[in-house]
Amino acid sequence: MMTDLQDLVEGIGRGRKRAVARGLTWIERDSDQGKDLVRALFPMAGKAHIVGITGAPGVGKSTLVNRLTLALRNRGYRVGILAVDPSSPFTGGAILGDRIRMQESVMDQGVFMRSLASRGHLGGLSRATFGAVTLLDAAGFDCILIETVGAGQSEVEIMQLAHSTMVVLAPGLGDDIQAIKAGILEIGQIFIVNKADREGADHTARAIRGMLTLGMQHLEWFPPIIKTVAESGEGMEDVIAAIEQHRTYLKDSGRLEGIRDSQTRHLIELAVQDWATRALRLAEQNETVWRALREAVAVGKADAADAAKEIVDSAQRGGAPGGA
Ligand SMILES: Nc1nc2c(ncn2[C@@H]2O[C@H](COP(=O)(O)OP(=O)(O)O)[C@@H](O)[C@H]2O)c(=O)[nH]1
Ligand SMILES: [Mg+2]
Image 1 (cartoon, rainbow, N blue to C red):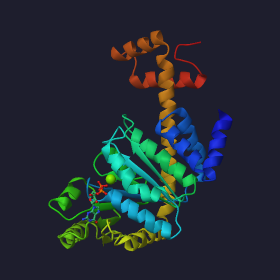
Image 2 (image 1 turned 90 degrees about the vertical axis):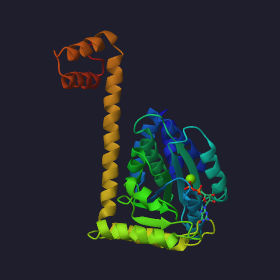
Image 3 (image 1 turned 180 degrees about the vertical axis):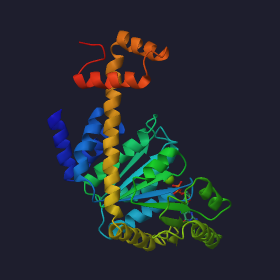
Image 4 (image 1 turned 90 degrees about the horizontal axis):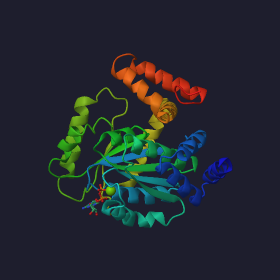
């Protein structure tokens, strides 16, 4: 088992696609193996620039990711792509559609793409995304693009993993208002008005600028607003320039190091949660003691925190509470 892990870590470090694919499967399953792998890879990661791409369904995120990938490849960057869609727990239409649109990029050796669907439990998706980003980073991808539908809590968590978050909008009724509702303005460092071939793109750009100016004069980084036509690839050079400028800003302001530090913190938090969960599972194995503990808490003979402490202490001694 141990050499299996080491082999995989080595293969990923060399950027071998089969190792990358296998490692991602471990991580997606949220297994102990996957967690061990992420911890082993984390020190090798930290070089990639992570870009989150969020926005309502249909604004053109997948098309943009595809075009942006091609433009980044032309500049010699290696690109990792994660499509995160919690609304598609199965390999459904949305993901298949994305795959077909991304086919062009997937053929290229310098591109790796993976869809991550919901793991069905709290925090599972952001955990899997964190692991997948760490893996692609360790595998030497220069730029990692994460496409996600900007709605729920896990998407916001995922965007917190990114260095640069791009909020994509399209001209049309209510798009700007939707953005405020979702609290998405606060998380964006780059704004994209896609479908600029359609009427109303200037209006949407002005609306975003107006809202940003209202709330964010104090910011050191004022988010650029870029018009694109993802379908034809128009505007991709501007998008790349904005990403590069934002990275320079993060570096010069010392924020880049701060992000690495908060990722490290996140990794330790995950390890603490694993440790506590393992202790609880161990406690549950001795049903007699476990029930006695619950009853004591239920009638107020013991505090829940006392019970928790006993469970963790027992796990540390290497057994279930009350066990020899
Ligand atoms: N007119 C126009 N349509 C676009 C543009 N970009 C994407 N689309 C179309 O918008 C639809 C949704 O695109 P998709 O990339 O799947 O959006 P997503 O749900 O945000 O990932 C597709 O039919 C695209 O062909 C664009 O720049 N102009
Ligand atoms: Mg999409």
